[in-house]
Amino acid sequence: MKRITGFSVWIVVLILSTAACKESKMIGTGNTATLPANISLNGKLFTSLFQQKAAEYRALCLQGYNIARYRIENYKPKTNKKLAIITDIDETLLDNSPYAVHQAYLGKEFESASWYNWTSMAMADTMPGAGAFLHFCASKNVEVFYVTNRDEKERENTILNLKKLGLPYADGTHMLTRQTTSTKEPRRQYVMKDHEVILLMGDNLADFSALFEKKNMEDRSRQVNSFSAEFGDRFIVFPNSNYGDWEGSLYNYKYNLSQAQKDSVMKSVLKSY
Image (cartoon, rainbow, N blue to C red):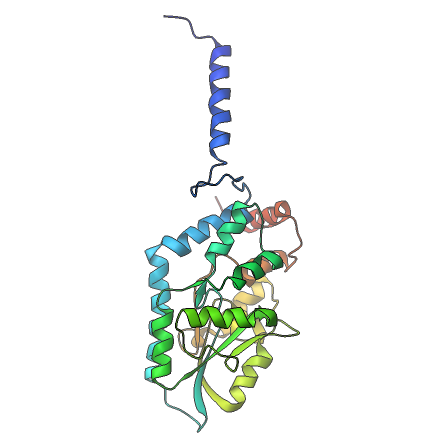
């Protein structure tokens, strides 16, 4: 048996390490890309995997729609106005996790140009249970207003996407896109002017009240506590660990920070032992 020297062992380790590094660049789709090493990008793959494959995620979505259905079935109108619900679209009705995965494979975060390209395809699928719930609303003559922060230029393709999925009220009247500001409060008030709104649905706290907008982490938590009776009653929240104000509040909504800077902030607020 030949004697194995320390130098030989070092060479073997170096070769194996190099091979492992090369392997980490291979993506399961058959494409070659650099696997993101930072939290803000690599995390998108992990959270997208949960959104796409976890039965628990499906259960959470169904739970949200079931609660909303129960609320509508047992709602007693207080006025003579037409009944309606207000709902967000992205990660409340439509699943955009394929976009997050696509961007992460490219080593990129959200970009307006690539996002517009994604929405122009009108190929996002519904979240589990969304279609059945919206058709239930229509069967009860409860109008559905889609209050989204997609831009006006995305209106046509967003309506097309909803129509492809056979969703009700997919028309210009019920689609309220972002105009000059991202706050949804004026659009909510517009709907409430002529409709009695039973409930609101969303994945982001700002989908429910302007009081949640642009608040830091601590203030957001305090506001949630103050609205605790509304959740599961008038406010139906859906899970979204991929993006949202929960992330923006970590670094005070400074979205222009580098990935390394965002990672540093995230690590600084994480608990460990």
